[in-house]
Image (cartoon, rainbow over all chains, first blue to last red; front, side):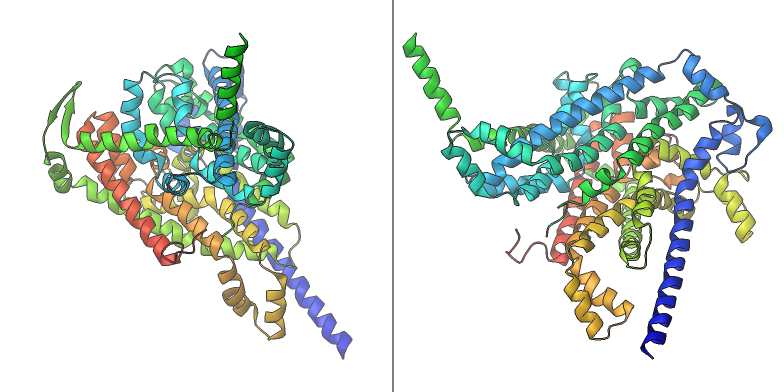
Length: 289
Length: 308
């Protein structure tokens, strides 16, 4: 009696597993379709791009390595944009992480006048979309002569409210005794942060480095406003400027298609290797009430 | 010499004392807040009462606000943004939660792999994703989505970019493609903090899977839900890059793809009508504050006095 019940139960579980697997396999195929279309199209002749759009047809007669050959041998600024994007992403991410961690330490381990109000300001900034500030910030940037420079792109983002909030949540898990022990050992306040607390924040730093890194790499509107020279363009701006050159230049579509693949591919490869690190980091203590 | 050294040392000691240090720590945020948040808002309010052209500005009182109220495009922009926000929230909270529960279930195999694949779209830049969707939703027979609809459902060619509802569907599907995986990750980490005992107790009480979902899972992931709701409101109201990519930075037919930020950008940057655009920007700020307030009040995150 018992064994037959368990058998039936196990059988049910197996069907359930198979159903789940089929469902998610189909789901994943759908999610991967846009990637597949862009990859396929990057091998097709670009003169039919506007009329045909993207599809999943494999048309051997119009497929070639043309776009890639042009991307790697032609005369254009794609790799300059690439370098700019890498530079901006690395510098902005490192600075954002350090400065935001610096601020969050102040909020987490001290009581001082105005702390609650200032922390409320962090929460408010977190909820107001940056895009609302865009126009007045742009005018301010012109007045301060910060346009056309990476410094101008970076500076509003460095003390990032979302990142500060995340770090504060994380620091709640670190006991105050640690800071006090540091004081007793004769460390001053800054070296307590630099030598004791900052190294302990590694998991939170890893999580936020991914979030900030991806956001910076993909950031589009604000750099578009700040930057004017095409040799300072980042990848998203450069690629979108190619779309704007509608039909006038077929070579620009070649860079657009092959370049888009080359923009997405490295991140996806990186993600495949560090997948666990990426996602686990995001999950650790992201939301605690 | 030694005197000088002493004063230096003393200064350093005050600077690094536990009284001064906290202010040094929060200073970067304070500066950012004042320079890049408060000042722009104030200057925006000032500009909204002026007519700014070619560097010269003239005080015009409420003229910009009257123009905004009379504008036919602005209500369209607000309607599109709000509609987009509501639809994306309606889709992007229940379904990712359900998927997260499914991925988390004991019968699931290879959950980490599927989660990773579903997460991939968020790594694709908005510009590339927007361009891909632009061409997939091309208004020709040979583009993927039209081909699919014509073959599978036998519909006629759908004009995705020039009709209101198809355009909305296109924008929403781009959002769903990009964010479903991210929300699944958020919900899965939320599910991890649900005590197993709750499920065991529900099992003992003979609860069905659906009952367990409604009475244990949903209330337990409330903090995560509030968080996802907050970022969805943020993302929904500030959406512009997507529609910019879908319509090639041109204005869409009948403004089917016009969002509030798009309106501000069009008036402020493209047409350099700063005063008018500032007006619209402030309205967006107001809408955001109201929506967020309703959300926080409704979910009980504020107003109970016990907020952390």
